[in-house]
Length: 538
Image (tube, one colour):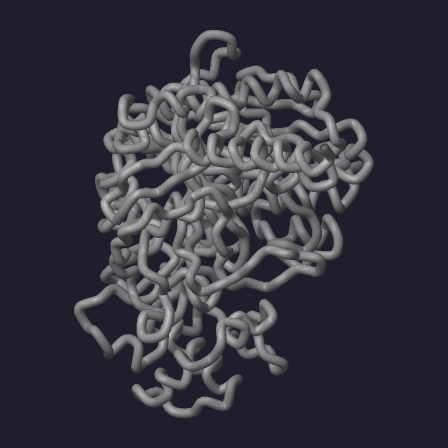
């Protein structure tokens, strides 16, 4: 009797497994059929290759076409992350074979609908991060009738690299910022394949955080990305030259922000591994290094301080200019824009090594009195608070305002926001406002995946999440975040200067930008800096 019962249970389990497999959605892509999984009424597809593995001779070359497959490909599991520094306790698989993307779509939409598409570019300083994981789940977007695509792209020296012999081989190919080439290849995949998942290839919104936000600026200004997306959102993305932007590929001292060329940095890295010379033989030895040797434990500089990682590269053919120069000339893609940042992005000596308020204000030169009035009008603020607000404004807030203004000048809709919510339990630790990336979980409605977060979100947090996810999906649908059930978010106007403010308690309202005095003095400091550079003939 016991054996019979075990047999019945086993048969039921097998029947249940077959039923799950049969109910899992399958979609025909240009390269072959993929079978995903189901989470309620949302279908997901993970680990879909959008380019061939960039290994062997294809390391440091533009993404190559995917080899078609005949059998149904399992797309129910996360793929490997691109090689990066492994943090203690990390169990994530890494591989150079990492050019995959993930798709979430309403199960009822597959092959039938033309839903708007959101295309997420993860952050991580271009040296870390992933398009997978619970924090970037697309379930909430799909429930709002929007398809989400997340991607991996090459990181660190595998994503941004130059070397003299590399520049000479395959002269017809783009060089330098392979990470951006990957992102464009993934956008081209969306254009060719997303209709099969129920998406509209003519209604694609790119959005990204931190380095992913910098990538958004780059895609807005790289000619090869033209026409692949139709709206853009930047989270803590900056916009001015100098922060994770383009280093000249082979010219020394051509840019005061980047005195050393990317090729020289590549030579420095080769020497670190005792590879001498700059010819094809040296390049072959570099390609023979393991991925771990390329990542080098996350080191950007060697023991003597010589730079060995370039970051994004301005090669003149693929990346033809910085985003700031494109914005100033009105050469960016003409699309609606949402842009903003958190209220207290990062503290410490991030922009400068000043150790006091006086030393920090002295950096403003003859604007020192105006800076004091803007940042510390009563003279009683802690240095750490002033430093945090200055870092936030210099790197993120003022460049975001500058970007929004250039879009308005080209008669494109722009919406500006500041995220300031801090959980009550974190307010002692985050004394000056919301930190870098704290808004992302609210946009994705993945609060339970927040680092260090309580197991259950509060009622107030759930409401804020509903509002933010609705704003973002509304924008993806129409280019306007407004709609039923959310507070009005006015278009950015250079006269009224109204922005959306999410305050410390999570309340949402539009109001004239309270940072105006601070951003104005930072803008003047940027202009002085540019004038000084031009006067030196650089």
